[in-house]
Length: 407
Ligand code: UTP
Picture 1 (tube, rainbow, N blue to C red):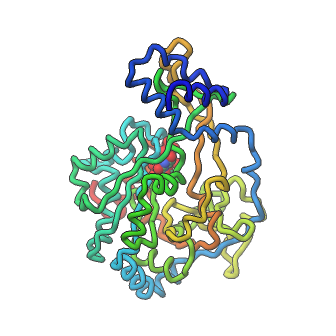
Picture 2: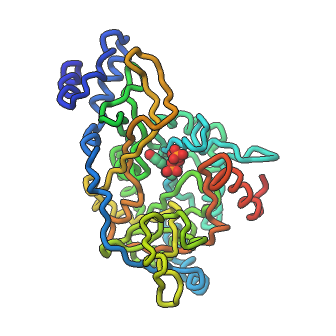
């Protein structure tokens, strides 16, 4: 794209100011800015003010496969899972494109050292967990790692420097997720530098479209991968591609399996698996009516009782049916660093604009069937969102120690 085309494109959007410093930029920066303008999807800006996507349908309960059934069928589930893994039908995909702002480190979240007496990085824990299954099944599971342009180089360099914590390099594929522009409350794009429009990763649902854009669906097809376990970088206890979960999802013949934990209290602040207008969905804790909180299943247990932990096994052949334009766009107020009218960098103390994100939980709602699969919270759920307090480095360390992991 040349300057004139870029100017036309941006002025049609009422965003010509992004070229304000163009004349004073060195050649390289000019090219970078024009490339960014050509490659960015600005249509997200049109979603500002369209609140209709928040409207929810009619909720009803969705039964989970609970621990007693899992224990009873353990051998059957395990054998089916091992069979799928050994046949190379199962891949893992690490969602590591987030900014980890709450943790407050400048490095990618996975580089965070949670060790006490020795180094123990978040990435190390995650890979060690996956390696358990690799050893158990004697199969090098294909591992995709999604980064963003903000953390890609550091992530790749760090993992390489640490020899991928024992994972086989040729079984890992990195790819960058797409970025979405960020703007002020009036919809004007922010600039993060004179040659760069402010952007942020487009949310954890970005994995599928970004993967396709990177041409990686070829790998899925070539290797006969039928299932992908998508998981967050920050839950240091989760099992990934564990045979019983894989087996349960395959045998249930659903579009997606979702690991869930029993709620600690009826009003716990977690998203809960359910049906919405007959399709799988997640109801947020603040959307639960009193009636839903008191509803009971056939056994007299709470009917909306299983919270998601961001670990899903998607059936690959059903992913193509998920279309971007049916996915709600979450428009989130955030602190967005920018340069002001004089070209000075500003780090706002309060939210000053919008970021645009699409979320994995909305992908679930586009599928027709889902199996919520119960895991034991103390054994599989230790998310690290904050340095201290709830879902923090501190709480995760406690849980790791309880599970016999030396730190
Ligand atoms: P969170 O929603 O907790 O976001 O991500 P975060 O970026 O890690 O942390 P905060 O909110 O800025 O403090 C849940 C998972 O989704 C990934 C994260 O890396 C994490 O594994 N994620 C999130 C992406 O891969 N891309 C995104 O655009 C957003």
